[in-house]
Length: 139
Image (cartoon, rainbow, N blue to C red; front, side, top):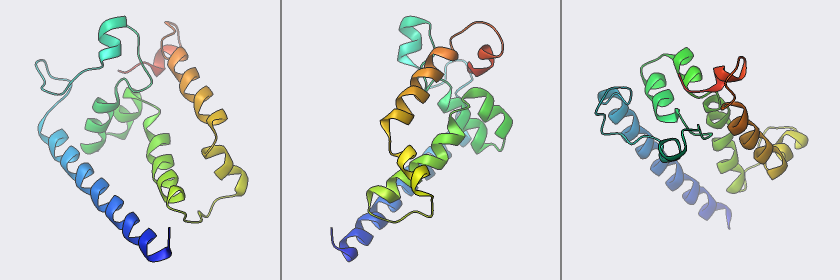
């Protein structure tokens, strides 16, 4: 992709992500996913299995974040801060931008050998019923 086209593509991606984030923040300001009868969907995996997936609690974590409660956001899903830092970096890298990261850190972020054990381990550990692992469950 040529440099100007790459910049336009990144600008369009940033604008689209910004619009989605603004709409999501607007909804989460007005709708409480913790409330009974909330129109926001729950986790289908949890509904059918009774087990937490890596994304369980993410909507409630974002709701807490929109309301300025960082501690509650981390309590709902401690993976949220990791993803909020990593995803923009991965998008920038996918558009060919050189990131101000050490080569090893970038290679780690791009590696399935990092993400699969992280997500799989988080998935297993947050379903264990005793502390400290029970602290990984949403709530």
